[in-house]
Length: 218
Image (tube, rainbow, N blue to C red; front, side):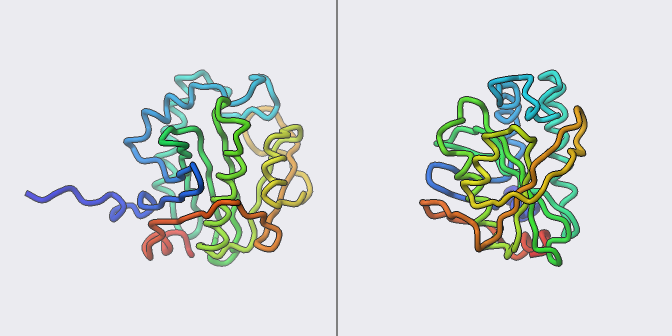
C-alpha cells in the first residue's frame, strides 16, 4: 500500500507559501474551505451599503459561499501561462483573515500582474492590508520577474487607496467598472520595482518550483 501523493506535486500552486512578519499567504486548499466559508459570512465593510462593497459580497450568505467555493475551484482549473490567478489565503497567527489574489494575462510577454484583496472587518486597522500586498509584490517582482503591478478600486474606497499609496503605487487614470452590479468609476493604480515601497520585515517565499514557474509563464 502506498501513501497519498503530495498535492503540491499534482498541483504545484499548493506548495507555494509566502511568509511576511505575522502573516502567511498561501493558496487555499480544500481543507481550508470550511474556514473560508465561515469567513465569507463575516462583515468586510463597516457600511454594508458602501459603493466599495464587492459585487460578490452583496449576495445572501449561503449563495455567497456557494459562489465563492465554485470560483475557487474554477481558478485552479484555469491556470495556464496565458492567464492565471493565484488566490492566496491570508493567515495571521494561524487564523484565516482574508484573501490576496494575484493575476496575470500572458505573463511571459507582458510581465504585468494585477491584484485584488479583502480582509474581514475585525482585521482592519492593523497594517495587514499593506503587508499582504507588499508580500505579494515581493513575490511578483523579485521571484516572478514582473515589471508592472496594477490595481484599481472604486472611487471613495479610501482604505484601498491608502494601501496602494503605502506600497508605492501611483495613480494611473480612471476606468468604469466592468463588474456586475452598480456601475462605478474606479481609480487605477500602478507600481513598478522602482517605485515599490518594501515592507520593514523580510518576505520568505517557499515552493516556487520549476513546474509552478512553467504554469505561470515565469
